Length: 297
Image (tube, rainbow, N blue to C red; front, side):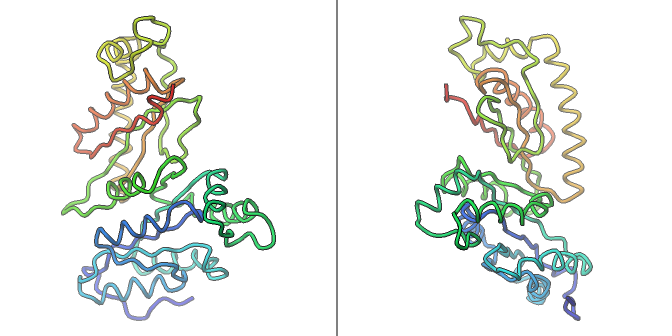
């Protein structure tokens, strides 16, 4: 495939975002939010047209500064041309971000059954057959994604909030980090970029007066952060995150999820997530704290 012969001046090149992911994982909601945020959104675009779309956006002389293209398996055989399209964009100096919407097989099956629509790849088989084929097709693309949003436990409003946090306009885009606590017994957060295990610290669950409290309570926070190794971990992990976030900025990554886990996501991970978030805020990082499993017990 040949990229457009005429390229727009680099100063007018629009910011380009490719929205993709599993069917049923929330692409439509994501596209709607981007449109509300002022992005020019093109849905179900054949991948071979991506370089031309970027070129046309540049010719608007800055009138269309941000373009989002929803690209997915609905485009059928055209979807296999996405790799070539991304290579063409790279040769022309365009570096699009890739947003990947993800959800578990079980959740996707329920969503398709709820709307009584077939999966675009299931053919004569079952919905799960289509999901399996799609996941295989998207494996490499998911690995290349700049942002992965796991929507299994999100409703449309929560997904919209994540999108706004990630893509609202700013004069100088800053790195946005979600610091998440979680319980290992409820499963790993699949959208985490980094995962740290707080189970090396004594569990407040076994202290009778602390058991009913959470890591948000001062007594539990003091207990967790005063344990041997806790302060050292916090200092070293903060230093590591400074290296990582500096690298994210250089690579143009604007959204990251850092997850800290303990057994149930109630005490140790909550207290340490709050402490890590406070340290990152001092580094001029936009931080959102999410306690995924707090209250599940």
